[in-house]
Image (cartoon, rainbow over the protein chains, first blue to last red):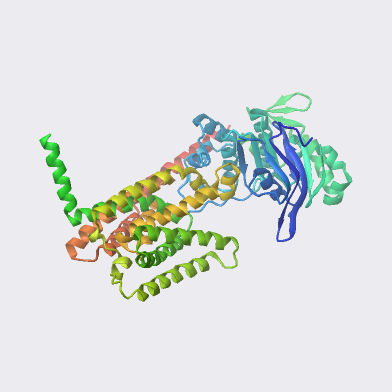
Length: 275
Length: 296
């Protein structure tokens, strides 16, 4: 599996150490075009470090990290502070690391619902707005590989689901490989092809359902986490269509989610209006 | 044909005038210092600029010691100091500002000590500390404009990676911008600017030419490229204003330029109430319209 040549990025038994301590070790993973790979694990389990190895920001002290040549990468880092001395509007920020066509920029801003912020200075945005602008910047690059480090920080629960739907949409549109990092086990699963559970090493990996039912996963996160996953799978029995209507599991289409479904988050109602 | 010759003659005569040379030299330096100064402001490197210019005096001393060109020696010492700083930061046991202070003042002190040892050398120390723009020669002019054009050319080449690295190093690295290479080139450009501008404003005031025009431009600029161009223009205006001021009131030229730059910065602080309020109103309307548009 690790020798497949069409993989975007391949980590083989890779690890990073800092002052005699291994931040993460023995990680083997691949991301293929059109595949969403999710890294989960508790704080300090080496998720970001692993992603940085895959990106080439950190060199592997052990093992190898190989990216396909002339790979176009987009990265949404976990934290990004824009210095207030920088005069930087959203529009220019989208072109930070490469030229982006006007239509690609507009499409990306529409997808993340930030078109109205195009001329705003980046430092004046709220946390949630900035998160969506970061995502828009990544999409506008039309990358082969998209690396998202905790892209849902500061986004509320319904926003989170919408964001994961969007990530799935990006994968379908661009057929890019996506490496997704999350400490949030509730909602990442539905769109993910493969989950890699880290805790300083690869603790278990496989399809979301296989990982959720594995003994290692339950040992790491507890049975409650596994049940949370089950709840999410149930809750996502309907699809939000682009025009704002809702398609249910049985194929019926309504203007809103059924209020008696019993799984709605209170704020979802207002989101439906907004969408 | 005749007309061209006379015009050329006129230009040559103009260059014979020390004041014209001073203005040309100052404007040349300002056009380069403005864009580089923006990076100094964005990256919070004001103290770094100070360190390099302090180290320039050591370059002057070494130039006299080894009888080499002053500009070359200053460039070499500044480049050495910036690389040393980078390496020291890697094995960091001291904070960046402590390291900068250490390098700045040891280089300055070292320069003064070396100069004192060379009893056979009589130099005008004040000229190096505060600049001697009125003594600019035609050769200096060539060095400033050719060197300045080279610096701006290289800066344009590394602009995108350097700016991306200024926003976020890891992001730039991940997306193939090679920020470390851009950073090293930037440090060398800084060393070059110090070397060519030392004679104009002097080692103690170079940082002012880097920072003040950029700071003034920040108030009005909406984009990084715009801020760089504005900073260059403001710097050039400060040079012209400062030199005419120094001619008028018989004040030292280097400090007069800095004072003129300060005046322009203070002007940029002035709020133009009508302009500001109309922008706020426009924004409010736009936001409201957006909210309206969202309603079903």
